[in-house]
Image 1 (cartoon, rainbow, N blue to C red):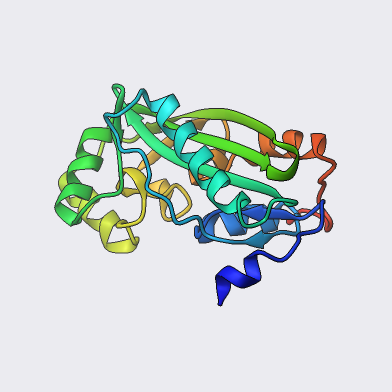
Image 2 (cartoon, rainbow, N blue to C red):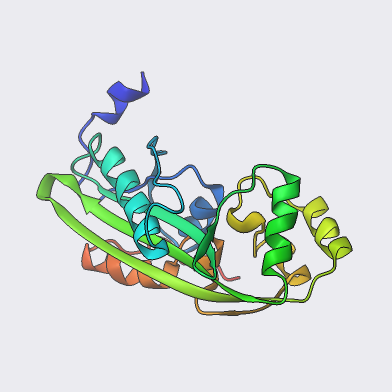
Length: 208
């Protein structure tokens, strides 16, 4: 069973991504890192229970701690990314109607994308946490443009109902700050923190 396999000792320099997100896998791979992926099955804190910065950091910590219990020697990476407009957290839409409503609220406005990040090595009780914020400026969108955009992407698993990496030019004017953070993993800041744990890319980062 998977649970039994996860109890095997991990190399001290092993990096474990506590996420099922294919976008985070791609970002970490493209940056040149070697890692193991293990989804964290936890109950996440919901919008409205805490300030946005606290919320995403709390969820990142929950994910990292859940996986670190099964891989105590490894360095576990937990991440939670949220979309915030006027201090309201826009989560993953329940359906197309809600996705359309989210984009209608975001159109013509500047909002923030926050990623809470936790790096945890359970055996030494070593933990590093941080939050990265990027400003995303949306174009003025008509209902027909929003419909055309939603026709082109899988919106159900995207916070705010959109993805910068999927036809983002249809809806986004500009991103101030980390682009990778908007996609789901702030690679620039993460690389700095990983280096503190003596984890560096093992292959040359892919050019984009």
